[in-house]
Image (tube, rainbow, N blue to C red):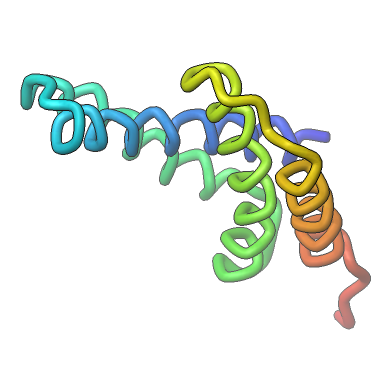
Amino acid sequence: MKSLIIYAAAAAAEIAGCFAFWAWLRLGKSALWLVPGLAALFFFAYLLTKIDALYAGRAFAAYGGVYIAASLVWLWAAEGIRPDRWDLLGAMICLVGAAVILLGPRAA
């Protein structure tokens, strides 16, 4: 459960940070958007170090599934586009894959 909370917070931070760059480069917002964007991306990277995994690659791979699901939440909440059934099915598949990577039994 702790990992899920960390991953959710990391996804929120990464999406917010990336959106700051999107807003600056694609929406014509001020370069000042980069200041909180960079802070959010720093926080995202920090949070991933808090995942209980022996190897960074596994922590990052499992995070990928959470990021996909969180991106669809962003799509709906921030951009007003409701994910369709294919978005939701894809996200569920990714979350199952993330769980297998993170929670699968490992040889000692």
